[in-house]
Image 1 (tube, helix red, strand yellow):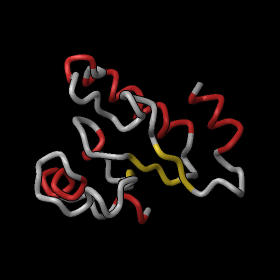
Image 2 (cartoon, one colour):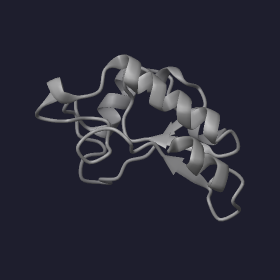
Image 3 (cartoon, helix red, strand yellow):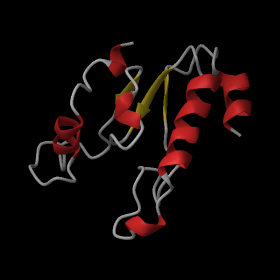
Image 4 (cartoon, one colour):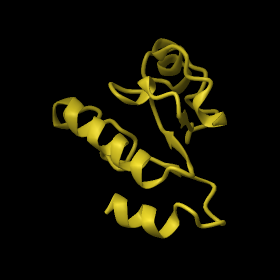
Length: 110
């Protein structure tokens, strides 16, 4: 599916970026409160690699950092609950997770 989307939209002029919303209950890369149902690390890695291969000319964005995502310098992040959960200090909030992930500020600018 990802390969077919890339073939059709990777060079489409009206598509500026893609959000990697494939996994999780709401496509947000988590299954809270049922974390045991979430995709394995290998599946997460395969999804990220599939998007990266299929969309080499588009910016890719994820909702949260995770096992494989924050290790990719070419991936950015988006906050779909701004400002409700952006700056809160609980460990599941957007900025808290980004801070914990480390150097996340370069991906979305590439």
